[in-house]
Length: 262
Ligand code: PGA
Image (tube, rainbow, N blue to C red):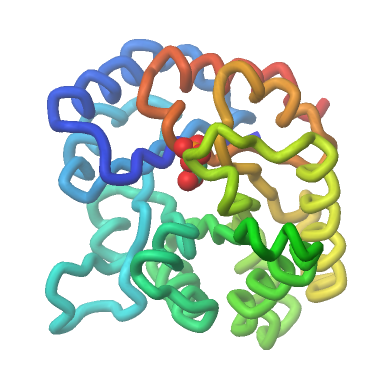
């Protein structure tokens, strides 16, 4: 299980400090087989690295640039994140796709950059409401995933295994993000099964033994987490709003502990 808190462009410095201090103070909650992650804005990387040192919670970035270095004003490379102590990066979040024009091809390049820097990428996929209303959600999200993994598809079996061991997928229906409209348990189960089947179709023998974890994201909170995390192919949650409050995050984490595979 993986419980990941995506802070987005939140909170202010004092609240970020308090949140990280709460995680550090409750470090004994975190279990080795249930990974807790937070994704603060870049201005708090140093704070996260310092406060989370010696805890089992890891942190990552919400985005990275596809190039290693250069004249890209305002951008941050995957290596810079790794150098600060970050271990993870969210790639292709629907807000990046929607507001910053990120395409599947760019997202593929960012996954490569993350891998080259030793970061674990969390690749986000998810259908907008109009796609679901027409019943096209399966092809849409599986298409996003396959297009972003094209470079991994071309690798040798051994390299594929190494790359896929680090990869995490997050299924986040766009209409469920920040809306309080969580997808039904049946919808989630079907979409995760579809993504699992697609991974098998794409990689087969190249898949790592434990498969690629698929997280659910979109209005997860302390009330609905237990039911969502109990679904067979759900390996964790990517949590936005509810991750900005320590107690809420701990409650979701607790639900994950209770749903760990035996
Ligand atoms: P939400 O965001 O939990 O606030 O819906 C999830 C996300 O965008 O990752």
